[in-house]
Every structure is written in structure tokens, then in C-alpha cells.
Length: 77
Image (cartoon, rainbow, N blue to C red):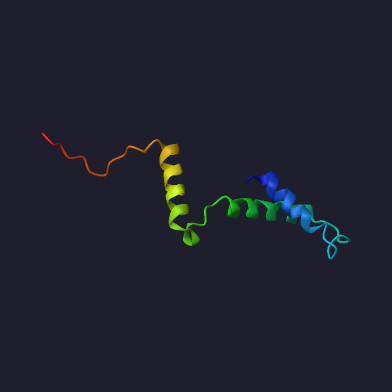
């Protein structure tokens, strides 16, 4: 997701029937968008399934270049 996505979601709040006649506080909206962007950019691994955890770990390993990393290096000579 992105900050632009978060701004759009925050703006949607001012388009609801209950809030459409309220004046938008642009500074407040921008700060809320930053918080929303930050919160939605972090994987919720505490609630993740095993499959979601494996997908996240695989992605991190592939992006970091550590897919072939071994925790123990044993010579078999």
C-alpha cells in the first residue's frame, strides 16, 4: 500500500453521510494517513497462519538474497 492509498481512504471518511457536511482538517487528515500507511505496511504476523508466515519469510529471504543461507556449515570431508 502507499501513502496515496491511505490519503484516499482518509478522504472517504469525509464523504460519508454522517461527515459530508463537516469541514476537513487537512493537517489532521494527513497525519492520520501517515499512521494508516505505517500500520498497513507492517505484516500482521501475530495473527498469521503458518502458510502466511512461510510466504512472508520466503519473500524476505528472496529479497534479501539469503535463500541459500545455512545456519551451520559442516565440512563433510
